[in-house]
Length: 460
Image (cartoon, rainbow, N blue to C red; front, side):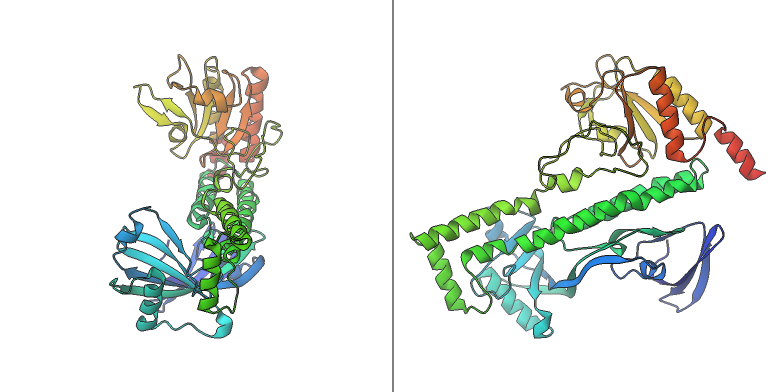
């Protein structure tokens, strides 16, 4: 990883990537040769541009200013401490409200985010103007405000049609650019990296064929596209509260004050406004509680073995998460106990960059099969038995309820925590199915050659 550099040119040669890089500090340029190149260079990705990735969606959907401030707002938050505060005031001309306050250091350090309309020109970012507006939003002129930094940014709604080209891969904001709504940007970016990292490791170590890397874009691109859909929908839904209050573009502050008085009135218009605001707040669940979009995504194709018919769709895919071990899903959390009796999560069992096969009482024979597969393929595959009489206990029966297989069945979990394959029971047919599944995932004919054979061939 290189810092303070930018990629000027990318060339692919047979079996390698050449990148011409400029050191921004010294202005020195030099060439780097590598097996693969990863562009994690943000929303203005030069790498994505260099390799010709095509994008869909809108740029500049909205414009905002972030103001990093120090201000003691503890007394305004004491009744309901939170990480984010969305404000509205009658004098605001902005459709998403007066501004958003994001907690940096409770309760005296914040990011105040305010929208502006580029069509009306550049915003006034002078300290005097910013403090005046923030005081107006807070509603108390006596609050001391220290401005630490100011920055402008655009709300985009773009995603790349593919995340890779040849030996070059892009991830994070380089391939999905969206608003902060739903707060998924960092999560999705890190999961891009996690998805690609274990695949690169297996390919570079000779355990897997390079074809495994084709699954990166196939798996992650639909996730990025769906997150952008949800994020941009949440941005639009944010207009629900001011619209329900009766605020409209071009109204004076006095007109909006009247709308607010009407909201409190015992009248048909007041009742309609209150009903509309309640509905808009309820709709905000899809911004702040959308667990389905966070945890419920599934890899339908890629480095998974298709054919599992057990998948149970969510009744509301954005909002509702259905924990399950169907192929392609993320392994759900369940409380288990380790051999010393300490509680931990099933998520903690599938760490260490290895494949993990989870089974239960009667599934002991899986260990011998996995040892054979490890010898033949070089794959680090570990077996964990969960349930009564097993090394790991299931004290509350959570794993039994969500595992979706019998005691002797097996769930094969990839290094990134997603289910690659599973079997309902144990037996010779299922053991052979696991051998075939691993061979397919790795892109090798594991029945014919061993890992040692392949390394010897490469060395020769």
